[in-house]
Image (tube, rainbow, N blue to C red; front, side):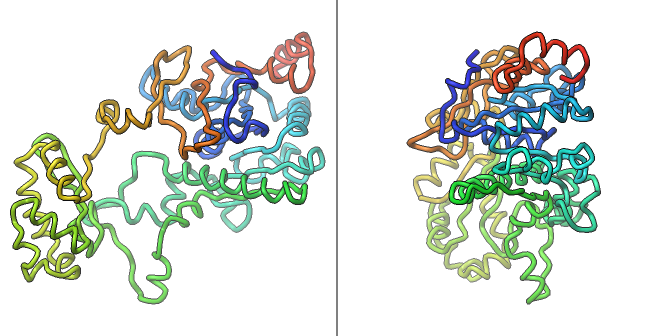
Amino acid sequence: MPETSKERSGPLTDLRVIELGQLVAGPFCGQMFADMGADVIKVEPPAQGDPLREWGRDGFPLWWSVCARGKRCITLNLRTEEGQGLLKQLVAEADFLIENFRPGTLEKWGLGYEELKKVNPALIMIRVSGYGQTGPYSSRPGYASVGEAMGGVRYLMGEPDRKPSRAGISLGDSLAGLFSAFGALAALHHREKTGEGQMIDTSIYESVLAFMEGLVPEYQFEGYTRERSGSVLPSIAPSNIYDGSDGMVIIAANQPTVFARLCKAIGQPALKDDPRFKTHAGRGENMAELDAIINDWTSSRTIDEIETAMVEAAVPVGKVFRASDMLEDPHYKARQSLVEVPSERWPGILQQNIVPRLTGTPGKIRWAGPDRLGQHTADVLTELLELTPEQVEKLKQSGIV
C-alpha cells in the first residue's frame, strides 16, 4: 500500500498538517487537506484512539476509512509532559494544527495558541468548536446537532405538523470542517505575504448560520419567520418530489418557460394558461393542486420513462438517489464520482472522490484510514524528530505513544 510522502500528489504536497481532532468536524477538515496532497499526521490518544474508529454497523466501522483516508496516524498522550513536548516538536515542523477539543482543553495542557506560536511563529492553528473560542457559551460541549439547532437549520427541516427532523448526516460538523479549510488557505495566503501565522476560530453554529440565506433579515425587516415546509419551498412550484412506479424523482419547473415545457411533456399544454397556474404567484398558491396533477402523470410511469420525457423537454429532473443507485449510475461512472481506494481491511472499498476537481494539480486518495492504532508512529517520529527505533519503543513502553 503506498504510504510514502514521495507518492503524494496535488496542490498541497509541500504542506504538513497536525490533526488533533476527533470524530467529524476537525477530521473532515484534515481529510480535505489529505485529499489535496498535504502530509496530514493525525494524533490519537494511546490505547483508545479516535471514537470514530468504532462507529458503524456491527463489525463495519466504515466511516473511519473515509474520514481518516490519506492520513498518517500516530499515538501521543497529550496529558503528559513528554507527550506535550513531542507535540511541540512536531508543531515546529508543521504548517497547520487542527483541533476540535472543548475550548480551554489545550490551554490546560500547555498547548494553547500562545504557547505553540512560540515554537512556530508561522503556525496556522485551526480551532473548531460548538460555540467558538469566545462568548458566554464557549466552554459548553457542542456537537453538530446542537450547532444545527442554534444555527437555524434544524427548525426548518421536516414536515410542518411535527417536530423538526435531521439530515441523517453530521451536517454541522462537515460545514465547520469545510469553512475551517477555507479559512486555513486564506491564512496561508496571508502568511505567504507576511510570514505571520494566526489562529482560526470556527464554530459549528456559525458555520450552519452562514448557510441560512436571508433568514435573519427577512425577520428583521418583514417580521417573517421561515417555517418547515416538508419537501417543497413555500410559493415555489412546481418543484417537488413525485412518485414513479419504481422510485421517486424531483421535477423542478417553476420558471414560466420551463413550466410551459413541462405541461406539454405531460400531455396537458393548456395547463400553462390555466388561471390557477398561469403566474408564478398562482402556481405557489395552488401548489397542492398542481403537484397532484403532476404526480398523477408520474405515478404510472417508471423513473426511466419520466426522465426521458423531461430531458427531451429540457425540464430539470432527477432521480432520488440511494447508495445502490450511485453504484449503477452512468454519470457517476463517467466522472468517477466514486473511486476504489487501497485498503488492507476493506479490499475494493469505494469512496466519494475528491471535490473540487483541479485540472492542473488534482489530488489523490492514497489509502483508506489506517486500521491499526498508531500505525505510523514509528515512521513519523523517526523521520521528523529523528528519534531512534529504540527511543520510540521506550516511549511505547511508558505509554507516551
